[in-house]
Image (cartoon, rainbow, N blue to C red; front, side, top):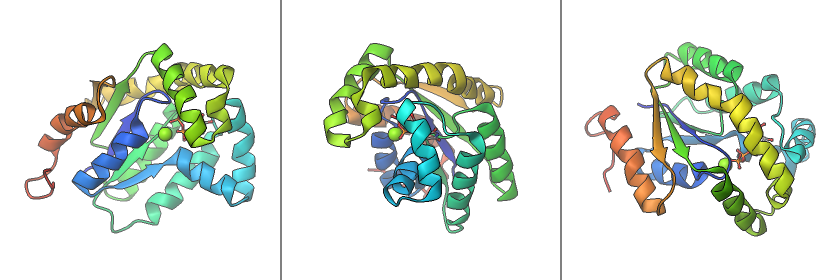
Length: 199
Ligand code: UDP
Ligand code: MG
């Protein structure tokens, strides 16, 4: 049982690595960005509200994001643990997540930050825009706003979990497999023997 926050700026590879981690550790992956895009795609009131913020590269307000996240966690009582991808993005979100985990008799064990510098992020996100079809990926000034929001509002979450001795940094430059190995070196010691499925 391990609950993990995959952290890092937009375009740092969180979604890509989360998919590999799910396979190895059997965790439930929750990406709040993906959840918002589903809500938008389904034309729900929540989606409509979130869309306005996302289109500007701003954060959706905490109460909306936290409520959506809580519903998703509560929908998976069978989970052996979660990978939180793109959440928490603010200190109040981190505090809410810790409370939610405590209510479930669980805790966050680990935060791993993928480190990638700004110009590489801009390059990657522009490159994926054609595939992702995301309007917030296609516009450089929105990408740069997302990076600024990350630095101002989200980066303090690293320090919040560092004070609990839970934060780690990983170089996010390299092949997908190389970066995956860097993550496994940190996670494996926290997974009980027999619980993991080594590749
Ligand atoms: N977003 C948000 N809170 C979240 C997740 C996403 O406000 O918890 C919004 C925010 O506007 C962000 C956008 O959704 O820029 C896309 O987020 P996602 O994590 O999918 O993309 P990434 O930042 O990883 O490129
Ligand atoms: Mg993502």
